[in-house]
Length: 168
Image 1: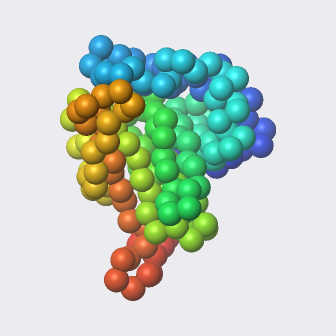
Image 2 (image 1 turned 90 degrees about the horizontal axis):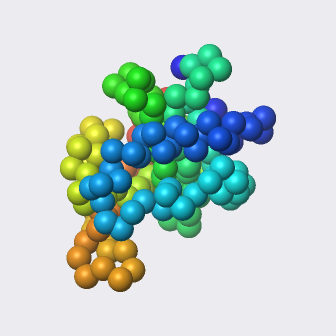
């Protein structure tokens, strides 16, 4: 498996969209409101990669995973994390998160942050196994109940400012 951050030669936008749609398909009937991915096309992903860091995982020529990492003033926000079904449980998500951690350290950020839908309990557990902790609940505009939870993973020790897992 190979991980690349913002690969300049990346041009497989339709394949990326297909990977994301395949990975997110199971949640369509379970979440409300629908994922923003339902309104995105390949050109939207290309535009997103111009303002965020696209992290891709490949096995040979096959795209097997991805994530977007946005450098924010207080953290690195990880979104649209996806792993191809046939590669789940093989460390792909862990490698994508490690790459995002590297970006956080490079940009002097203390933690990674992401959001996952309230209904997707299995995602909460998967992110917890990667070191994330729930820190907040939020509601999409127009909703009077929580629709997402915010999770955070510290990459720098809060007590002494030293990098956690500096070799990652």
